[in-house]
Image 1 (cartoon, rainbow, N blue to C red):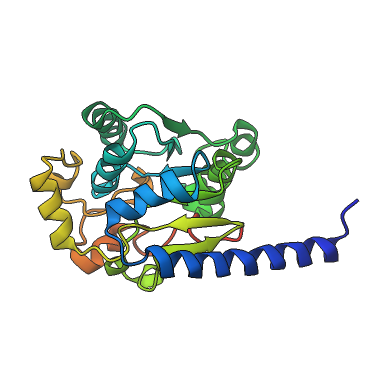
Image 2 (tube, helix red, strand yellow):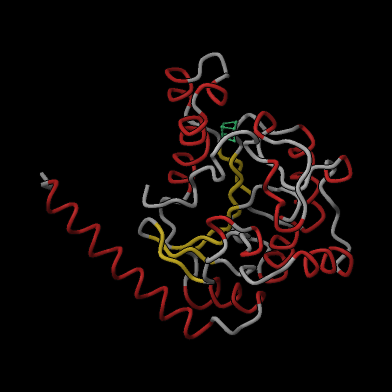
Length: 245
Ligand code: SF4
């Protein structure tokens, strides 16, 4: 039996080593462009041990387009919370076909978790932190089992906890790769135009940042793009970027 103190020491040691690894990766690859950072991570640093996580939101096509340029078969995890707008699910399927992605995994919450905590589907209203944990954080942890690293599309301009993100970060025993960390809204809109990427269907309706339907409101732009998420609450993140889990 592993003693709690020994377990804690092991986790601290792992976190220290991962932080040092992230620092060294940033020194070596931090000046590369986004596509080359992604290619290096997929082909050289974590071959066969890296996945991409995407919300298929308003800006997701930019990262997924880079994924398709590097390797269409990289595993892409989509957290199918059961609370998405139908338009997001249609957009996911549209982007998969448009970009030729071959391994998009829609990951659902555990049925037993929803049965004890969210039988009536209103947990988002009563306890959004627990709802995000059951519908996003735990499913992601299960989906990333066996992977050493994951890629996501956060940008510093999004502000809040995202304002300081580095291209490589240690997170929950894995390395998190943020190839778009330095991008700005202009670069995103230019890339959509140049690469002829289809927009999320709800963007034209006034949604700047799109997550689950009950927790997403219209509005937000540029640096305040995420202001439409969990409006009226202090909550600004779902928890998947607040490791360790
Ligand atoms: S964003 Fe809202 S509905 Fe989605 S998992 Fe979190 S609390 Fe639940």
